[in-house]
Length: 323
Length: 205
Image (cartoon, rainbow over all chains, first blue to last red; front, side):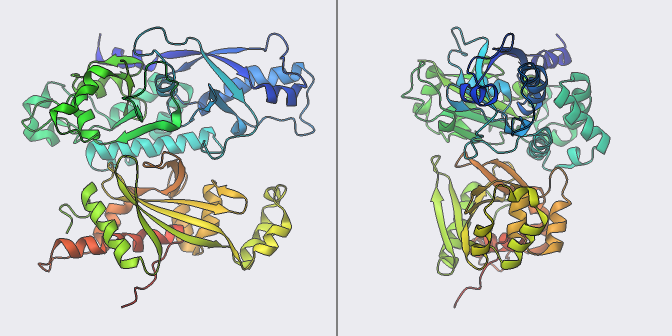
């Protein structure tokens, strides 16, 4: 499989979700906790690498609006739904809308590493009482686009020591990148991504460590680990709570001292400042998930970032307890 | 002195904020805090005042916003302490410089709207103009606080290093590390503070 085909496969990865409307909201809008047929449940596929604010519009247009229209509810008396009031919940937890959907799934759903994870992913949709202390308020496609650009610039800085590549893009190219993400068009997105992150020969990492600048290799890889605090005490059936995740962000060099390739295990040790060999329990006790795939701990970081990057050019790695 | 000025390592940053707390502790509400990852960051608190004309402007210009606001609250707020501003100086491993986070607690709760916060904190229209001109939503954004993992407003750090390099000359008088680290945060705040209404008081001798 070519590099591009592999990257497109990741781009095309979807999670089937099953949405139900929060009972309290249903009662307020429709005077009934039971929704009319055929609107009781809404099914859709959401791209793993995409973000909730970009699918909210579809949820409203294809489910909520027709449902309200059919029920004869009109926009008087405050019975409206604003997209910025919409939020998603899984098992009592509001979902952070600025996290890619696939990352949320890998963090919160049990058994993704092995066993049978929940599919479709059963979520509750809310249109009232936005949890302002827990979620960034006023989600919108514009806010999501702005936040995404901040992430892409940060990734550019980590890789290249400046934000030049992103800032030098023509305005139309920046818009194409964002449009490609928003409508989930690989062609549009990847054309610009290839400018920000040019392809390189992976073998060159080891051979030309002295001439990184000329070979176009990045200085460091943008990477984040997500791990439940007290992971050592948790067992597989413990319900993950998103606020208890510790997020570790560290630019990771491509090689260790002695120019050996940096592996995922090395990056983990670096991020959590594990210096002695007795701290290696994580290798047997934990699995590393990226894009829903369990990644062997000895995988080189450069390979991982070339193939399993998220749209914001970061690697988002979830560490789960498997013992 | 920082080994790679204007960039800092995390441990150099830790030293810089300890120095800042020592130097400014008597004149500012400032504390070095430790987070769960044993990282340190700086917390500075200031009371929030809304000047009388600020609340008048709010009455006249933002009619929609007032539907949810009790007008009498604005009147009583006019010359009083109306809340609290929390500033956090947090190290960014990505940008290798400090990043300024801010959270405004007003009578209505935490204010999570960037324009509203800029209205409350930035009096200087030139500064405000420069902030609004920054692409992709302006100079103030919202993201999860790297240590607390909760939403906070923050100042985009992309230009920090350039500003620091241009304005501040690192100490090279042979006394080295202590002097550079002693002044780093105050120098950095002299460049970034105006965008969030944080100015440093003079230190008593």
